[in-house]
Image (cartoon, rainbow, N blue to C red):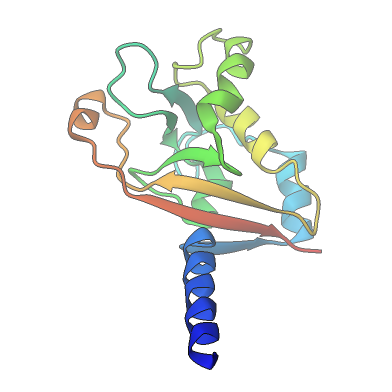
Length: 166
């Protein structure tokens, strides 16, 4: 009887470990969250590069579905984003499902064009949470903003949890 219980407990533990597989946890203070909400976009080529984003995976685009960046701006850069990283999902929803229609109505009328307005909208969406909430983002660590590089793309997905502290 005890052996069966031990086996069941081990299997349940293995299942919960894989479903909660987060590579990184980031804590955002209430003060930092308020700063991001008050200024979701910082113009210019500052820390993290020029903040511009686009959706990939449309039509003949060889890149997989996700948000590609020219730069990560100050907020994503501070969280650890760098070259070759692409957000593919937020809380389990595909970013293409979330942003395709939203970005079609922005300044360039094209979700697949690099634009600062796309970046700003993505930051506003990602950080719309309140202190005490959290969000899970899926990140392709092997993405490239250069289309010819994406032909041989082999995704390496990590899940990062962002906790918004009180």
